[in-house]
Amino acid sequence: MNNSILYTVHDIYLLIRKNLGFVIKFSIGFLFLGIIYTLFATKYYESYISINPQDHKSQSSNSFQALSSMMGFGENQYSNSSFHIPDVINSRKLKLNIVNKKWKTLVFKDSVNLIEYWNIEGKHNNKLNINPRRFAEEDAIVRLKNNLYVFEEESGLIKIRVLMEEPKLAADIANYISDFLRDYIGKDLTLKSTKNREFIESRLKEVSQDLGNAENILAKFETENPESKDNPDLKKKRRQLNRDILVQDQIYLILIEQHQRALADELIEKPVSDLLDTADIMPYPYWPNNIIIYIISLFTGFMISIIIITSSKVLSKKS
Image (cartoon, rainbow, N blue to C red):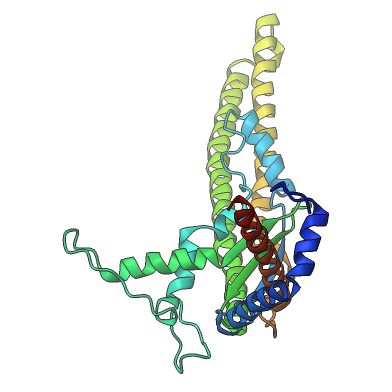
């Protein structure tokens, strides 16, 4: 071996061969540490649901947008807005509901919330006079956030993954998220349908009054100006009054049709998504992954042992 402190692959091979016993013992020692970690580390079980969001813009909604735009109203004023489901899942409202909900667990005989399950104790702020439970809720929300993952694929498919210390608890929370999405977004869509119907009804009332006024004006005009006495100016005025009635009548008929569709749209139950996969109870823990940890432990021990023997060789050369 040359006197340079720079080592080639062949030099390192010779060092490993010379100190093979040390390398093996050191690697096995790290493997043993990895085994200890897997025995005592908190086990997390995975459960997930997959959702395919639906488009809630109906034909009547699209037609009504065109109509409201024609009448001078904003295009999206009363349309059903699309929901970004990951934003709803990551909302504080959902996490707070999950934290405070009572769950059946293996650790406790009675149902408990996650604050009690994780044994989180709230801090007390005497200066601000804040309830200690508020601190406990925030700590539990942060911990839940670290156990909740949302993945959105290019196809639009959304996967929600929950990691918890118990397999059934993970599945229960994942399924609760699915129910929350249906209830929360479904109610909001129904509210928008109701506002859509109420807006059309208000326009129907206005157009009906305008149509009645136009018909009264035409009737009064024809009474005062029979066709037998028409001149060019009277003919022009008569055509204008008939055209006003025709326009108002067309708008009224369109609104009648849209009103019927809005009534039906309000009554129809609107699923927020296609639930492709419901959460199942997984028998094996997601973490720790024993095989990966054992491989990493062996590799880490092997690399550190090489660093130790090469460093000691360098120091001996310098001395």
